[in-house]
Image 1 (cartoon, rainbow, N blue to C red):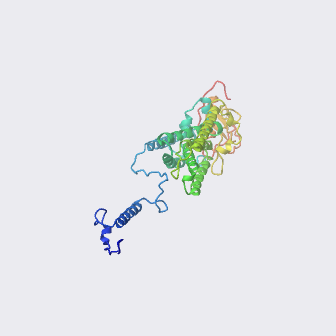
Image 2: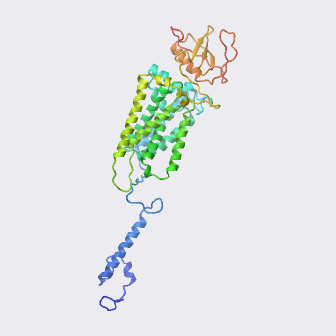
Image 3: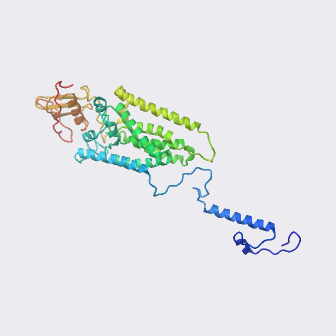
Amino acid sequence: MLGGDGHVKPIPREDDFALPSGTQRAVPDSDLALAIRLQEEEMARLRASQQAPRGPSGSPPRQGRNRRQPTSGHSFSYLNLVFYAISAAYLALFLVSFSKSSWSFENVNINPMVGPSARALRDTGMRVSANIEQEGQYWRLLSSIFLPSGVILLFCILTSIWTFGKYMERVAVCPLLTVPLLFLLSSVTGAVLSTVYAQQYDTVGATAGVCGLLGGVWADQLVNWRSYANHMATLAVLVVMTAAFLLLGLLPFLDNFFNLGGLLVGGLFAAMVIQRKQGGGRRRCHCGHLAVQVVCGCLMVAIITLAALSLAINKGQVGKDCSWCDNVTCVSTRWWTCNPMSGVQGAPNCNVTPFNNGTALVDCPSGASETISVTGTPNTAGVTQICRDVCLARVPTAPSVPGSSGGSGRSPAAGGALSPVTAPIGDGGLI
């Protein structure tokens, strides 16, 4: 090759280009030395780009994107201890209720979730509006949110707790504090709403906390909509899960007011504590997100306050005047029957008529009747207990021809005769 002075110059050997920087022969031509250095830098840059992690489409990820750093599979999470404790509470209360049911399952047309009897659930701590409002058994607001009605529900709850809970752990701010608080707020609010509006049924609310976590997943998808892909598939999964829990709320011993309260409060609370993702590496104004947090906080406080005031001051009168609440709580089908328990504290809906031969006729609000054995004359507390033991535990049956033994002699349900009931003896007679 010709140099700048017109003289022939030898072409550098190819081996010199493969040598690392600093080991080549001294090159007198500055242009050639610059070309060699640029080639080395380009090769180094190409090798570095080939070793970088690939994005979902096979191309190197964008540097400006905020990407969640992968966590080690052996990392310890203190929130797992909270999930273990919640799961243990569900399992413990189920075993207690199962033991109170003599380790036997109730008929599936009474308890479709394959679980204990209604009396066992009630003795364990199910939500009973009359006991909470009139007898001050507020501990049922807490016990009912950890009490599953059957094996099927227990399995659904335990799997959902870990699925939605671990999701919220990744997206919430300070998850060790906010995720358990979200679970408790949504559960207790659902229990209060159920006590106020589901007066006619005694139910459990083990699904309230799960629905609260599900509401948190909804909130994250809506707040960070632009940061996610496959929106239609995600929405389809969330809609199916939400519809499944709402359908479960129509079964006996379950309650959609638990579920709706959990969804609302869980979603509103999660909207305040979810991390806002940003793209492109650009700084954005947080005014819009801050306004959403303030509005969600105000709505959540308003819902909790109104529910608490309705329970403390109005004693659930709002729910007693609600004409459509029963359709949200339980729907009877040919596979199961909903036995309403409204008004068991008073004679218009549940009557207990004692006879001189030691028996009593129980007329349930659903129209079913039973003849039982009693000891003494039931007072107000006795009537309440008898009504709940008989009406809630048996499927309504048509009455038979009255007998001649001093009472109506109506036949018991197909499940067999009831055992004698010992009612509290009162000095004021029946209510």
